[in-house]
Amino acid sequence: MSVVTVQLGQCGNQVGQELFDVICDDADQGKGKAYRDASIDRFYNETTNRELVARAVLIDMEPKVINNSLTKATKSGRWRYGDKSHFSQKEGSGNNWANGYCVHGPRHRELVEDLVRREVECCDRLAGIMAIMSVAGGTGSGVGTYVTQCLRDVYPNSFILNHLTWPYGTGEVIVQNYNCVLTLSHLYQLSDVILVHENDVVHRICSQLLNIKHTSFSDINRVIAHQLGSVLQPALTGDSHGVYSRNPLGELVSSLACHPEYKLLSMCTIPQMASSSIAYSAFTWQGLLKHLRQMLISNTKMEEGIDWQVTAPHINPIAPERSRSLRGAGFNTSLANLLILRGKDVYSTETGGFQEPGLYGAWLPSAEALGVWKSPVPFNKYEKSATLLSNSQALLTPLESMAGKAWNMFASRAYIHQYTKFGITEEDFLDSFTSLEQVISSYTQLS
Picture (spheres, helix red, strand yellow):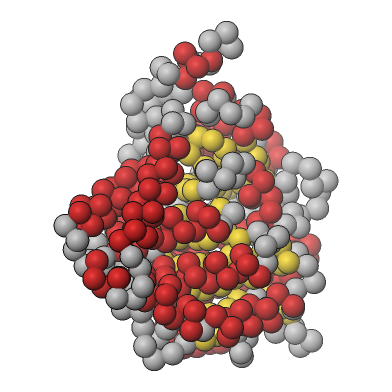
C-alpha cells in the first residue's frame, strides 16, 4: 500500500524533499529485496526503466522553493518528482493564515485536487495521505489547512496524517501564534493524527548532539526527515507474521489515536550523534531503551539533560486512581505509545519497561496502550536505533505558551484587521481559541 505525500509551503517542501532523499538512501543500501520493494512501493512509482518518481504533490504560492526541490531531486540521480506533480504562482500568502485559507486555497482547489487525484490513481492501493507543512507562515498553515479539508471531503475513508513543524518560541513571524491557533483548531476536526516537530528541540539536537556549529534550516530539516524515516520505513508489527507492514498510516493511527480528542503526537529518537563519533560508540538495547523510557516520562527529547529524578508510580490495583494521583511534578503521562526498534538483535529486546501501568492514563490497559514495531534492518548509520512516537502530555507546554501569546495579542486586537480583511471574523478566532483550550484541558486531565 502506498502513501501520497502533499508538501505545502516553504517548510513542507524542504522537509518533504529531505524525507524522500533519506528514504531513497535507506532503501538502496543493500538491505534486501523485500525491504527495498516495500519501501519503494510505499513512497515511489518505479518506471519501466527503474526510475523512481516520488508519490508526492508540491504546493507553494511562490515558485522558488518548489524549483529548488525539483532540481535537488533530479540532481541526486536516484529519484525525482513527477513532471506535472507541482503547483506554484507568483504571489505568496504573506504569512497570513486567512489569506492562504480564504483566498489562495479556494482559488486553486480544483487544480490541487486534480494533482492529488493523479497520484492516488497511480497507487495500487492507497494507505493514506501525509501532508507536510509548517504552522508559522501563511501557505503552509492556511493553504495547508484548506487542502487538508478538501482531501477529507474527497477521500473521507482514507487516513490523513498532518506533519507540522512548530516555530521557534522566540518567533519567526510576528503573527505565528495566530496562525498556529487557527491551524490546529481546524486540523483537529479533519486529520486522523497530527505529528509535531518543534524547531527549538531539533535545533538543540543539531547543536548539542550532532555538533553542528552553525545550525541552518537545512540541518533541521534533515534531522526531521531522518526521524520521520525511522517511523515510515518498513517494519514488522506484532501480528505481521514476518511480512513488512502494509499500511503504516493505518497501523500508526490505530496504535496511537484511540480517541478523537487526543490526536497530537511527539517523537523521540535514540541515539543521535555526529557521524565522526559513531565508530567509537557501542550501544546495547537495554541501555538505549532505559534512556528512551526516561526521556518519555521526563518529557526530554534528547539524551543529554535527562531528568533521572522523575519516576513512574507503582499502580496499586486496589486503588489505581490514588496511585496515579501521586505522580510527581514534571511527569509526562501517556495515552498510548508506539516503539519502533531497528537493527541488530532486535528480536531479543525486552520492552516491558514501556508497559508499566504507571506510565499511562486510566483508559487503556497498559498492554494495549503500547505498540511495538521491529526491523532487523539498521537505519541511519546506527547498528541499533529506537524511535518512540508518543500520544502524551509532551506538547502541553508549547501549546499553552502559544495559546497564551495568541490570546494576549487578540485581547489587544493586534493585527486582527490583517485577518478580517480576508474573511476571518473575531468570532472565528474565539471559536478557534475555545477548540484549542478544550484540547489543552483534555491532555491536562490525563494526569
